[in-house]
Image (cartoon, rainbow, N blue to C red; front, side, top):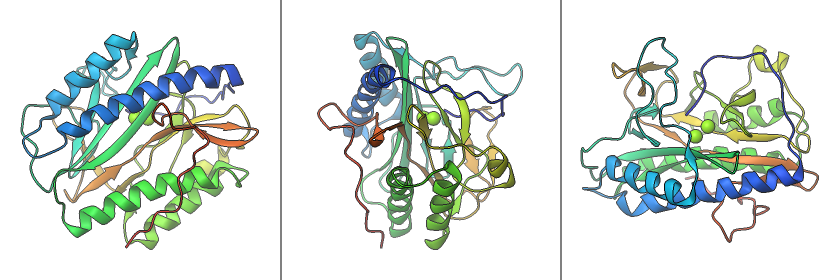
Length: 282
Ligand code: MG
Ligand code: MG
């Protein structure tokens, strides 16, 4: 779930204790995303995935953050589910339904929750059975774009340096960065300042920010095969590429600490200082 309109900017840095609480929310989000994976096969449905995640959050006493999220379009319906499921040419904000998944689909699953007052937000794009080589490469490139950003946070001073590396990598692979939606600060609220774009622009240069301890960001590259241009469907939520070619989306909630970046949305048992190694993309 992303916020399309820029607010006045106020970055709230988090204490080590607060980051620890966010890690607990992040573990729960990771568990929810892991739990949908057995349904990510031909015949599975995104409605079933939604039910699985809803019950995990409920059992843990967590609040789902996407359900009833207000529509950016005035007077249109709030988001009706606990997860966003975006299939193939859909980029983000797809609504779960009872249509069976098919061999060769790619499916982005995005969710977030608030636990004990603190939020976590993460997304993954899953291959349904065997996917064609272009889709496979798109998944690998998009995941590596997220991973290289997290690794780069250990050595870059500002976000624009990281965004530049993300954008250059995507272009080097012949793909495009979706620009209409961006990542975000996160804390007690799902969407806090700053905006966290996956590309460099004049606006980012003006609003650039330093990667300092206490900063917590939801980093979420959206990468498409054909065009970066998107449109919203008649359901007033689902975003798809204008050329209807595939798009993928990966997201982690990441905290800056004096010891470097920490991934808060890794599963329980995986230390948050486990940074992803470079992934080979063919
Ligand atoms: Mg997000
Ligand atoms: Mg998300």
